[in-house]
Image 1 (spheres, rainbow, N blue to C red):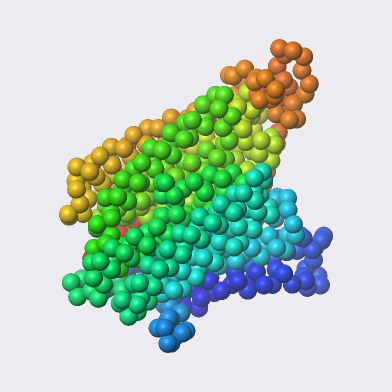
Image 2 (cartoon, rainbow, N blue to C red):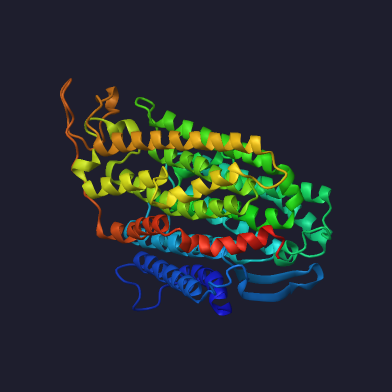
Length: 538
């Protein structure tokens, strides 16, 4: 188990180095580009296999105990150690990361985004995977920060070099926001380590009672500093403005990993660091975190409604990005309740969002490849997508992703949001119940608004043919035939789902159904670990 966890973290780094080397004779395939793409699928597949083996070998009877641990002194003078381990909180995120990265590599093998060398693309993808996996596996505050920062450079280049319109602006905005947040977070992590005398996250989590070496003032400063850095990555309103631009400009696989994995690093940090290490400080800031989360839920939904309305020329990819602000608001609300119910709901919503929004970004990216646009007015016009009639399997899968995202009971999106609101109904002792009931009501309003905009999107994109074509081609696509004044444009013929698309997207749809029908499989892992975490390691 120790070797498996170490391999999960290290193998992508070794694969990234190997991707930059010349392919061995006999493995070049048709061309070097194909060889390196095959290499990416192989390495990410091996990492996924190791992650699944970790999940199978995990002691499910004791999910609160750190398992597969490695603890080696690294910088002895500073007390920094190479400390790895997984429990019921980190294991699902580890497997989700390995799965999404493998599916992105598989999709890219058949549909590489336009840009520079495939070698650089595969190497960046593997470095990004290594950083995200390490974030969920390390148990040292300094290593956590290094892994947290490690993902920024590859994601910056994936957006800046393989992205679409406004990619340079979006990449710079992404890196500046996250770097500034990280600088503040580093100060908080150093404050905790220096005041407590250790950077070990397990030791700090079990020493947060009355005898804690962190005073109330230190905990307040630590949660404020660490929380700002984590909130930027989450993203929490109003620190979210980098996200829609980054998603809109990023290539398809960049958007999938950004939504499915990178956002989870911020919320995971709240659960792994802020809640157990500085509970007094977290208790003080919890109402503010919940308030920002509730506003974010409503704000994200209203922004999506504005983009979805006819004539707004809203971008479908940008709409899905704004929906993430709302969905991650439920995660932050669950964490802010500081109750087992709320935190378990937050962790469940993390996984559900990764599966569902990852699927939606895959679909929107493929829609843009087929039509050359993600403009909702053009996709909804008389010569628009009308997916139910022109590509029924594609349309059916898009509708499935939409209803899963709106939280239909029986699918994964339902349980996390419901448990987060249940946690807000009865928050932790000392938190204002009337305030949290207000936040719960706002979150409930957000679920209604979410259903509204997603159903509008499904009606407009999947049904189509209900709206007049806009002047200047807004209601028609670039491949449509010519028309005379007042005539209906000829709709292009588009392919339905390809085999590689089935292979890349089906696992996400299947897991969305399984998690919705069998939530105990995930909650059985997280609940004991959350109970111990909130109980001070007892």
